[in-house]
Image 1 (spheres, rainbow, N blue to C red):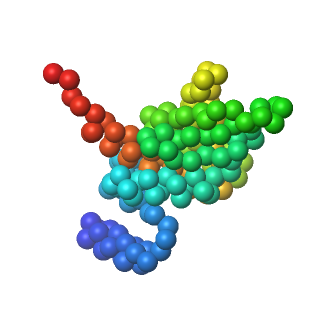
Image 2: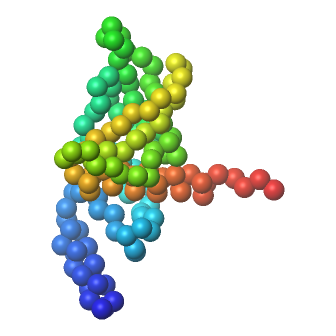
Length: 147
């Protein structure tokens, strides 16, 4: 049985090798994703490009180790960017109607808050969470250990 599943994984990898979509493979369904930093950044940018931007946001982009969202006020003026670190992204993917969502906490000069990003497919939402988790782990590995 294990040989069949391994061969199936290899077949999937071979068939999707030429595709532009970044696919994350997991050892077990609940295990953390296995991807490098550059792969994770590409997956995050790709999934953000497919997200439905919530009302009040002009754009969401990756900037260094933060997600950066430009906001508009009720008067139409643009606020400074709001930032979210990779540890501010929920690990849960929820479903609301036909859409999938992820909650993201943010911080700005005006305080803290929360946004909900929506996707039409669970794969795009899961890719966003997996990439953020991989970048979070890379950040923890880079941080110096105090003795």
